[in-house]
Length: 209
Image (cartoon, rainbow, N blue to C red; front, side, top):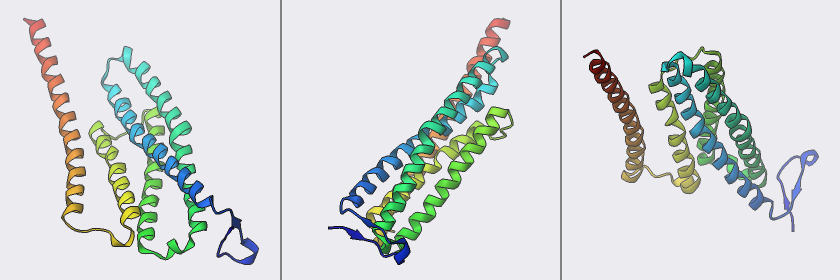
């Protein structure tokens, strides 16, 4: 038994029945790898940006190390994960072309388009950091790092609920939870920075005395 695709005769493709399962399996693997890379890549950007505050003797070594880690993560893990996820998604749509007529798929594709823009932005920021031209602060990068989490939640909910996307209290609670987590990270980073500044001032005051 094979799966004929609803394509023009010149483009018709016949796939084995297990093709859908293989596309789905590899799509999930690609998504996991892609998001893992996106989550950690911007975290490296934060460390890279904050390395500029170190003493010159340490700054260059840290910036070079973070730059190397960023390139390896982006080129060996994040981008290949994206390619696999997108390629397998195309395969799934070839097997199930009727999905393209459904509202939930339109919404999911819009979120994926946003993720591709985010992916491109990460490469731009990586290049700017390595050239010493990045104007983003550590705080702004931390906020940026929370965006994929929200996108991931939206994608999963769209896939699970499809055209019956929930808009009740549970959905708003989940959104509030994601926002709370993002705000908590921001507040913790600020508290840690202020604490380090106070300790530095106390040490400098003690040395002066």
